[in-house]
Amino acid sequence: MDDEPPAPALNQLDSCAAVAAAAAVAHAYRRIDVPVDDLRWATAVLIEAITEPSRTEYVASSFYSLGADRSAATGLPALLAVASDDIELDGQEIIGVLDRCTTNHFYEVRIAFAQAVDQVWAAPCDADQRSAPCRHEAAFNAVRAGLQDCRLGDWDPETGARARPRLDGPYEQTLPEVETERLYLTKLIPPLVAAGAASLSDSCVADQAKGLVEVLLDAHARATDHWAREGYENRHSKDGARVIVTLALRGDTGPLKAHAQRFAANGRALYGFLRDLAVLFTYDDDLRPTLLDVWSVVMEAALDAIGDGSELRRDHHWGDDALGALLPAPEIDVSDADIDATLARAREGWLHPDTIADLAVRWMRIARQEPKALDALAKLGKCAPLEWQRDTGLTWAEQLTDGNYRAIANKCWYLTDWLKTLHSRDAMLPDQITRWRRLVDGLAAAGDDRAAGLQRIEE
Image (cartoon, rainbow, N blue to C red; front, side):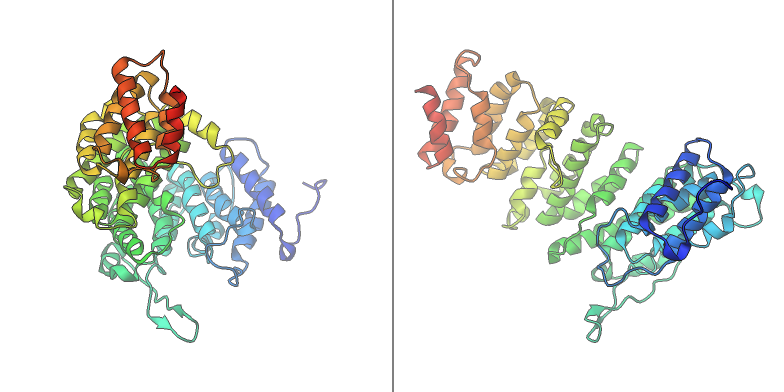
């Protein structure tokens, strides 16, 4: 290292140095040879990055992915995972700053750590290498620490914010006792992500993590239900949804069912949960083949809890969105820069509508005359072969319309565009053409301008 450029002065730490340090650690974790001196330098840089005071003048939800503290939250777990007799690093020095990741002012730092700590759970237990707690226990203690500020206190008129009384463990006992309206939802999600992965690992803390995950999931469901009713935003809901999906695919469908059932009378919460699931399956190519396994469970649980849908329909702002979201269809993330490519890729591997036909029949009974339901059918239909769309798809559309075209006209975003793609005098059978005309003429007669445009196709 003598002929290498000197490490940057730590009191002048910048984001570039932290990014470089995190990259070096990532190489080491992937078994790429990295000199020990470089790893020691990376350790010093990342520790300094996470120990510098947070810029609390910025709101906790601020995004700055290149921040030095973000790099530290990603790199420190990897350092802990690679530390061994062969790679001599000061493990206690690393462990000493893990809490600064999980209790950081910025959510982005907390979730970066929660996702990166998977590397620790996958590493071998090193309890026999030192008298201190093994790397798994040390990381899990840091995860627990992230729950100390998940409880909201009373309003403080001097600060203009609610106080944050410390919540102490054991969280398996204290967290269930926190009143639902005092749960700080976004502070629950990073510990849930980290503990969820630990509970599914072969690490020595897996059993402890399972107990914590159980109470975290209950708190997450309670808080999500409450925040939705109050109209609070949770920009990080997909992180929690992914944990629930992962657990379901590993055989524990209880949380998936419990969330759907809890939200059955809360249109905004149910819509948000179902939309998060749809977005995950739209963008994750590896996850998409399991869509049927997950959606059949959540759809059945929701339909069982919703009953005839009368209570959900009383929610005039979100009930219709929730009813539509029950049918699985690709959903676009607002940050997508190439929507057409995303939809094309998702549709190729999406489930065939016939695989959920029994559930769809139940759904159509409560979703009749609902514009959002017809839009959902249009989006799902585009994932199926044209033959299905022109036959079963149009049949389902008529059943959903239920002859009440006035309730549908000019209230759908996707329906008329879908109908346009289906039309073909040469490819459609006579009964399919008849059904198509009946839908288009009914909508046009009810004043739907776009449907009137479709009538001109046959002129």
